[in-house]
Length: 383
Ligand SMILES: [Fe+2]
Image (cartoon, rainbow, N blue to C red; front, side, top):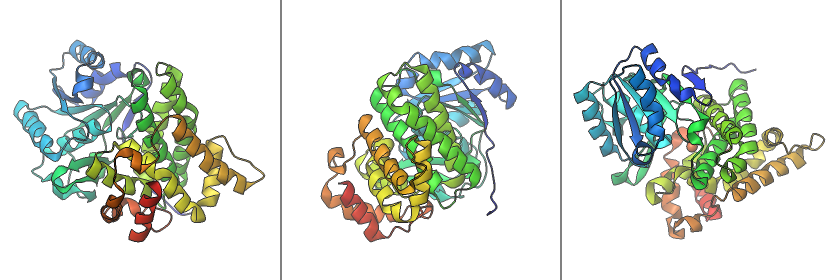
């Protein structure tokens, strides 16, 4: 067996009602003056009270920055960082979905170190840890609560770039499924499919190891069982718990194994056409899985087990069932599966392929080498 390194340093508090432990976590980290970073919709919702109450009770002097928009641009970071420095906050709490948590991770680093965020894109380019962070996800998708990754939009370059560094790993994650009960069906579907793809891609990644693969399988099992239920019956706590657990375990898995070509090809869709991350991934999933099939048939058969569709006496049948169940699931939850339905013109295929090839960080994890020509035909198939 090939050796591997296991690194999962985030303290995770999981369970309905666990948001009440936020003050305890802050104090454990030696902090007294937290800033909650969130988006306007969460900031104006009753959810914010769930964080406020325990911090008020503990006498913490906290602030709220509620201006994070979906896919925030790099310039917005400078504004938040000024605020953090001026008010001398000593802890950042990211309260929201993937964009909010990613923003919080980067703000934590930039508040302490004089760096240009543009210089940090890629692997291991963040020189040191920033302020301590606690992540409190309000969606089940990005896995950002435990991951070393932050994705940021650079509108002038028409691109989204990933920044991956151990210095971005949050100190604590509070994963409270009850916070996701009011999430609308479409966001539940888009973010849930993203989490599912984290499970699948981390399992297939060439960086996967036995521990990460078990986490990937656990993620796929929980998400495939609960995704359409959570989309149809948002208030079903058991389904939400399954999704939160699935998203968390997928996040731990890809923190070790990474994601691969689906994510690499999805990034240009977000950067150039503002397609939400989950929807962009969903549309590239089927073409990339079929592209990977020649080198992944045995692993697809193992994934079929996690999806509950394996035929133990016929691996080939299992492989086909896996591809079919993934297609059925994405269709059932209503995510778009064609680029043409997402407002992407056919002529954009060449430029997007060029942009995707720059995502070396992700492409190098893919089980089958992707050339520029491959990328172009994958986009054409998705169109
Ligand atoms: Fe993702």
